[in-house]
Length: 612
Ligand code: ADP
Ligand code: MG
Image 1 (cartoon, protein in one colour):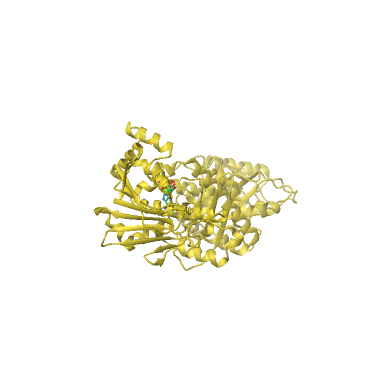
Image 2 (cartoon, protein in one colour):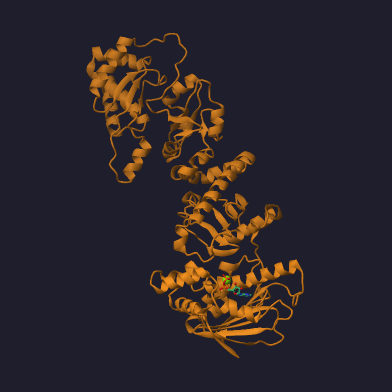
């Protein structure tokens, strides 16, 4: 038997690995399984190039066995194996100069020892977190190589001896587990860990005699080689569900980053079903080996409904959670995937309207959240928005692109109206001047739509304008024959009187053509917050500034004509009527602070009218 000391750096590394408390001790299983898989992959490549190979007929596979009684775990492969020289080189010295530097810094106290595994693929040596002793028996693929056995307790050195002549090609690692690592001899525990990290490696894993990895890493395949059934069954597997996904995206890129990804939109929105906020369910892999099953900041928050896999060869396998959080490569990956997924939705909307509409019905909230929170993607997301309008049937959706294609020649802006539902909006007096000009108005009936519009601001250089605001810049109407109503001087006397009466509440009182079906309408001035935004601020416990809207009267409405008369003949009654007209206008705009006052006032008015 040949006794050898470890290279100094190896001893230091082992010392740190073993003694630093490392919470994810289980990763040693992943490291050894990854090495075994690498060994099989190298063998596969060797076979392709031809030449003489020891035991060429041997199937490439991994085998894992547990023995609770003996407290051992064995991980074997039929891969490339190692020669005596290779064993000495690979398992007794550290080739990575980066590791060496790190060790020097750690010794000087400049690095946290606990981060070590997070920083480097310490790989093989991580086994000593759980092992008292490790026996590596290996036989190289080279026909003339001798099988060898390497044994170490991970302290000072290792011993090397000849292994039996009938040792098969490949490597077998027998791990004598520490007392406090006895769990790694328990079949269920090991099956769980192997399943978690290594379920998708490219070679079969035999676990205590049963095939473990039956699901393929379909994201690494070419799209044309994956059937619909395979996409579905993979979804069932990773989504822990029996239902079919609503849609999926399979995306691969070689530049600027090697990326392979399959993402699914589930059939239902779990948040709408009352299950609370979704947890991100897109796992991060490096060449089929799991890095993190729930990386927190992989994709933006608003994509939290996605389920799937992102795999990048460019990521270091042993990157720690902390490092994932501010990894610029990861941010790039997120940017690429997000862009590509938005494009996928665009294509879906074009090619499969039914499915897109289903998606919209269930997941629109997330897209809107994206518009509000994701500055760089908001314009692309704006194109995905759907809504009803004055030009659509109830229940039929349209997009900004369609709206723009229908815009009139003299129409500059995109017009929207907020409200609770279509039925209410269809009868809104705010529509009057738009209808008169034949302009389409979009109905926005979701609570957060105000924020969406505030974030979007414009679509294709066309401003989005809420038609409840005072500053609508509408083209003039073609001259209509004079309708009966107030003349200019009557109108200005009326507005001057009302402005005096309401100077604390209203910014201005005007007459004009912003309303034709009602006597008066309240219009938000530039500084006025919309009712939605006010409600939000209030809910957040912030002080809400007062609104000072403008009220515009319709000079042709009989009640307004009557009001002008009363101003001169019966000012008291005139004030009562004015209060009614103004308060109902505010009510319609969602701006009435005190509905009880309006109710009392209208009862008093009725009493007066009926009593006379
Ligand atoms: P890494 O995998 O990052 O190279 P490891 O510490 O995990 O680092 O392994 C060191 C080296 O030992 C590997 O590069 C490989 O050459 C060799 N090795 C480890 N396990 C095996 C195995 N099962 N079969 C063949 N060679 C192996
Ligand atoms: Mg390794």
